[in-house]
Length: 504
Image (cartoon, rainbow, N blue to C red; front, side, top):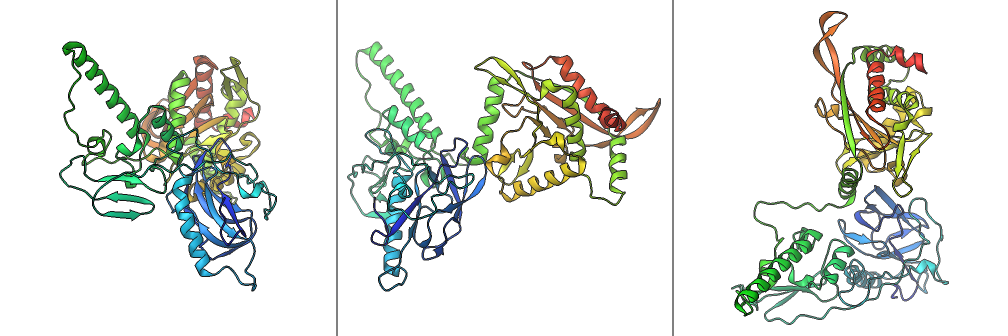
């Protein structure tokens, strides 16, 4: 493995981020080449499918190289920075020329680290220098990240250079061969000299390799020509359809079909972006949400019941509580307090299903998730031990987690482990919805907007504050009677908060 600063450099690679995560996107660099960093100082902010985290480097010294630009997606084990842990013979930091050379060398290895080899066995990542005997650094397993796990070694395989005519321009390790502009076989061809074709993940490269598909023949529909999984799948479907038509033609005529065009596949590859269309990769938090919602719909036989409730009493109770001079109580905290009381009466809904053991696992503690919409998409922070918190404590925790969600500071631990979810979609100005259960939980309570409506109150028509409550539940854990009882109890507490006091 090459090191910067004539062997004194330590290459720090993207560590195992836990929770089964295999890749992360560089959001913001916290250091520049030439900066002096301390042991365990954060050097980069990355976004995973769970959260945005700052990754600390276990080495102290001078940063001589950074690998990857902001927005680049790197797999676990890819190099992040090289740190010169010593100084020169005269006691000075490495010379600027050395830094520049290290940086240039690092850039040439970024493409190599972000994709698998185009031929040979499975792609593997190189073991971190931290595992070597001569390594300096903390050696800590940093909370939430882990720097001591040594992934397998990546073998570098250079792809064959493609022949072409015309002028050759190099940009970020890739070459573009300018040829005839008539779309013939000698037209523009884009390939890679120092690294593989850019793909969104190693899984896409593996899918192409397993189906003998040459990625260099595809035009990626992602940013800067990035090849997405949809591009590969589209190409495979088109190839299968073309093969089927060819077989049918040969069966009918006894002759193989003649190719209609000798133009390169890249000129007509299915999946290329059409005019007026926008493609957004499902990655990071958005990709994780998509996977989780799809799994919920696929695995959980859910059902939904709903009821309208007069929330006038709850709103008056909150006003009275906040007029007492103490800390302000939020509406979602009161709803959460009602949820935990309802789960104590109907514990079947604070559960999960173990499909392998074919068992319903009822949980004692209530870890209450709540949906929060952020610039990065929908996230579900979790209030730990919500059943043990009062309205004031719930208000403070909701506020802390909401602020962390909007700032992208939620940790993986704050986004996992929920047992029941509360979704206040009324903040979007809608009356009702059918929530999708947050897998592997068993239920979710949805709360619409509270709006003035005509309502029969004490035998007379009056204007009251009305809210629609909806409960989506896993029909495997309970029947409609239990779900209806839970929702009715929640509605009773909303209409008459004194009911909650009687049952505590």
